Length: 144
Image 1 (cartoon, rainbow, N blue to C red):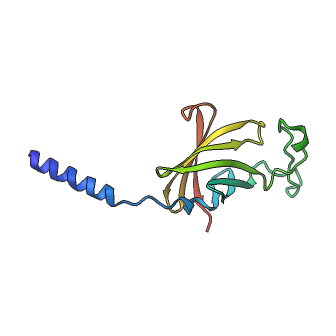
Image 2 (spheres, rainbow, N blue to C red):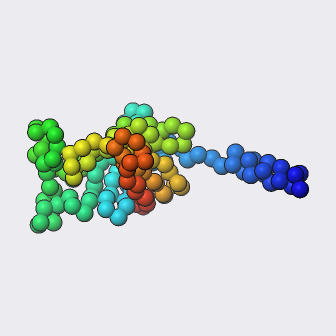
Image 3 (cartoon, rainbow, N blue to C red):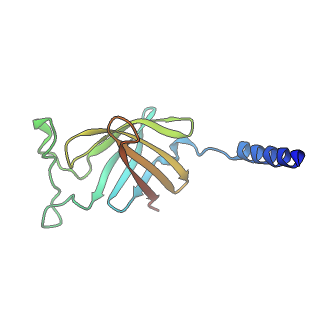
């Protein structure tokens, strides 16, 4: 019985070692979840994202981008929300993206941000204040 358990454990370990992490740049591209559409791109050794679409991005006419009115910097309050780079500084480390910052146009606050590719077309992210336990997760699908 012990030998069988050890053999199964050894097999699982060898399969896990064969599993390859996706390359860091695999995160680049356009991603969409229920409420948002973003474009991830590389900046030096980090990754950032700009906001392409959100449910609350446009004025009542459906065409005019809302402004960043809740930004703590008064000089930035007249900039359009559409195309705003709102995720910055993601660092790829041990198969995950960590140390990022998420600027929220909804409240003008900046939050911690991290993510992990679950597959080439599946991304899970979490925005949080202070510690990841105190945050909100999003599941994204790559837009082809």
